[in-house]
Amino acid sequence: MTKPSFFDLTLSDLSDELVAAGHKKFAATQLFEWVYDRKILDIESWSNVSKKCREWLGETYSFDLPKVIFHAKSYDGTRKFLVQFEDKQTVETVVIPARNRLTQCISSQVGCAIGCTFCHTGTQGLKRHLKAGEITGQFMAVSLWLKENVHEEERLTNIVYMGQGEPLHNYENVKKATINFLEQKGLGLSQRKITLSTSGLVPKIKMLHDFPPVNIAISLHSAKNDTRTELMPINKAYDLQRLFDAIKSIPLKAHRRITYEYLLIAGVNDTKSDVEALNKLLDKRESKINLIPFNEYPGSNYKKPSNDQVLWFMDQMIKKGYTCTIRATKGEDILAACGQLKTQYEKLNLWDQSVEIRRIENSDAQA
Image 1 (spheres, helix red, strand yellow):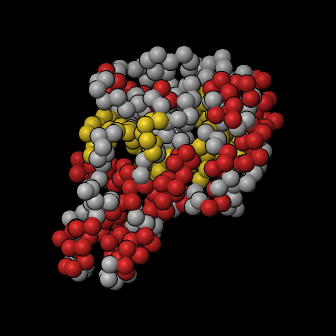
Image 2 (cartoon, one colour):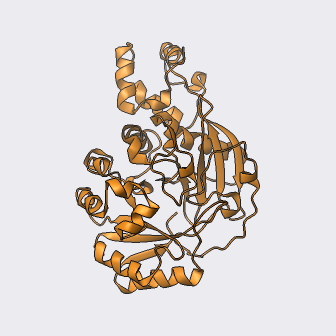
């Protein structure tokens, strides 16, 4: 019988399990510090944990992490990892360097049910949800890989739920993983270092009052219902009116704004009328716009806009009073850029593609 994973437990869960088994409650804090803070998974090394407790832990839980079975590094420093779980399913996770941070783009599902027409991952369909421990496990596995394989200091500082899957479709597991990311006795990330992105799953957006208060990003991509429906079939069920009614219920801390991700696609959503529609829809006081030039991939029906067109669109939004940035394109040469996550390891050509790099430089674009 397979043991449950230690990484599926929150600190509160572990405390309850320890007490129920006759151990001291405070051992939970010690264990979190060994596993998450020090990242030492050898049970026998936990010198301040009783032998009896260590034996119980070894008999009760698995401390296995997802396996890193492939790694590729882009010329710009972006790293792409293929990680494999116990059932041999795989997801990709990407590590993106910036001037003062190292961001991991984490997957929440194997595949995705949303089916956005611009997304490379969307061609797979949903295979299954990831467990909480498989989500935090991506972070742990990559952290340990970097520690063991990279000579220079590379420490993950930020997390974005922008990998494979719709995070809110896997609400409870993503919530539990986020609690562990934030746990000060463990990984200890701050709320401002984590961003939860959603395509607009309205019933779950209305539940965010019960979610840890992290940054929120909405994958908008068009302020016109017909265009958004073409790009994102979820808009048929939850159109812009319903989406923005739900967004009003999101509890925002003081001085926080919602980020609206806007994928710019040539001839689809990059015109003057798109600028006007966006201006009419958003509240500039509570909104930040993050423009993402579309990343072309083999078989895609869409085209990337010119750099001039992207800069024009940004300039129009800034003139209207919005905070508007361009996400720097990274990892194109290893198909690691946003929207290109596809876990088909057997198709080795996906790892060997040589793509002309056309970067839009932005010295402080949010990773």
